[in-house]
Image 1 (cartoon, rainbow, N blue to C red):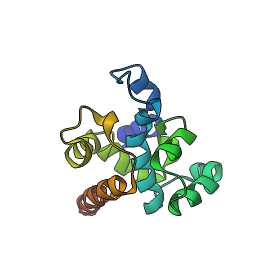
Image 2 (image 1 turned 45 degrees about the vertical axis):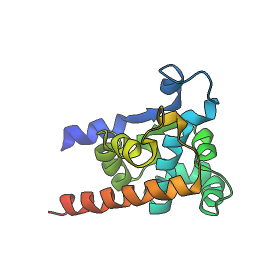
Image 3 (image 1 turned 180 degrees about the vertical axis):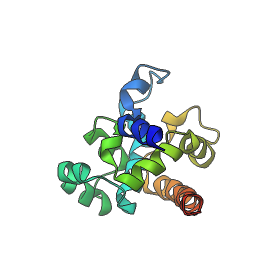
Image 4 (image 1 turned 90 degrees about the vertical axis):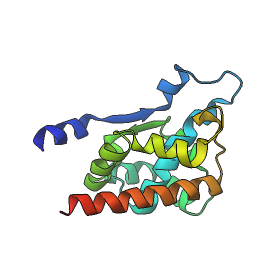
Length: 150
């Protein structure tokens, strides 16, 4: 477990910058690279799995997100599309390492939202899409909690 803990403490789970430099479609607005990251950050906020650092740095934006005054894209843009270990508390990091870092989040995102769209970047940043994804993450989180409590 100590090796995994060390790995978690250094983990960058995602970064919009890597998407810009990858297969990002030229015809889409750059903001679309932030949607999938923002949806996950939104869920982290709702479950209160964020770190004190995250809260200290983004307290107002977190409140605005909870009030649906800013979207998932804007939430992600605040952090420049960065999703790293220092944004999460201990449970948040352990779950993110398992779920996001392990690739399950991306598979769920494809299944729930991408479906027949050309890419993950074509998913619309909407509250309906966020809620659909949130339900799936809730199930995965519940399942994970059962696994770790054994």
